[in-house]
Length: 126
Image 1 (cartoon, rainbow, N blue to C red):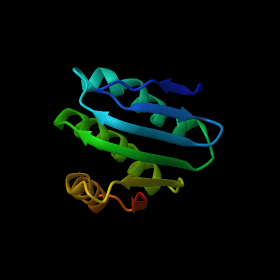
Image 2: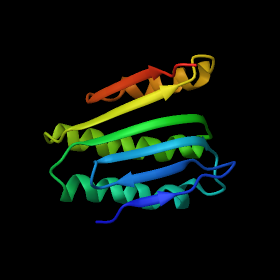
Image 3: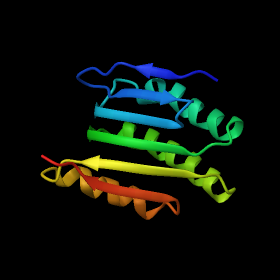
Image 4: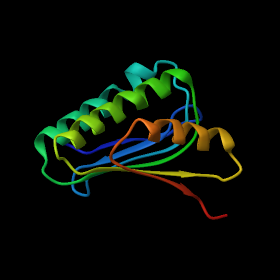
């Protein structure tokens, strides 16, 4: 299983999937032209990680904006994390946000409602 690094652009987040640390991080805006295609490798990486590794997986998010199709892709990732958690796997989400961005706070809270694993919504210090 390999690490993944995708450099962010004005419409896509920087994504880092690190097998050694068990961390998946996403930072920036997410409104790619084809979200399914963009997130496919990341979703596959999460699926492979929880099947092949026996260490905790932490999702670190610092997302500013997500379009509807990016939200759907994120839901797919959270569904994988929830299924792993229900099977006894250690997973967690830390979602960092700018306190001035109410839309991100609301989105994070909506995702958290459907998750039974550790899900922290953390204001970033300015």
